[in-house]
Image (cartoon, rainbow, N blue to C red; front, top):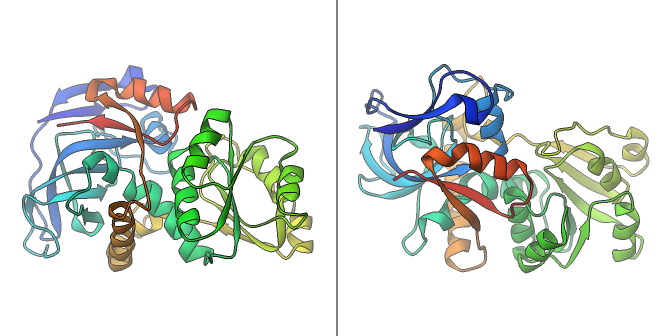
Length: 334
């Protein structure tokens, strides 16, 4: 099979190459092999290639943590999937290859009528947004949600999910184009990030502020957003796309009775040393079923902005890092 290999950490253009690789084989009863059609592009994948991610695969490895395709083979213990079934999956790495072997716990059936590219953003981007908002923050329809980085894949997912659940959504994005996309995704109001963010939010909310702040950005924007929080609000940090860790003004947290959530989606997908994916498999399957149902009902509209070939992965990562992208980028494998 063909696979994109990384043999040493470094800049993607310097360390990635498409090569022949041996076909994977089932070695455990809980494994499946998926013939990959598309894989997603993420900031985490770029960091993994550069050796800057918290997890460092053994060399050589194929990057890519999210894919869609068809079940080619399955182990004897796998009962919720069938050979030939269309699936979306989350893996440790390895999605940038024609065939992918992984535990079946994070492989999810794609319902009929949903195209591959519509299914691709669901497991990670929409899964992260849903679990963060619904499970951790206990989102309710009467709340106002401020979404930072609202033009990104996970940011747009948060806008759509919160809007679909009846919340008022204020979307913050870096450009007018991204704000327009967020508004089409369901945002009631849009803002571009600035030092005046808190004042703008307060003006939109009649001085109250917002009930939930969803932050995949970090850095100085978090500090600005913190001042836009209402009394007893919740803030959920899911990543640091800005490249900077935020500094938290704990005096504001104290006097406003705020709740801070750190949320690592990888705990549910086996990306921790404890590898808890089997423990959370039932819950994750239920979440994915809800999200795919909403896609089928046209309540969610996952967006892949551009598709690259396997040998264009370095260009895809550079495009993502250029921050001109709304929604997701994909790599066509098969």
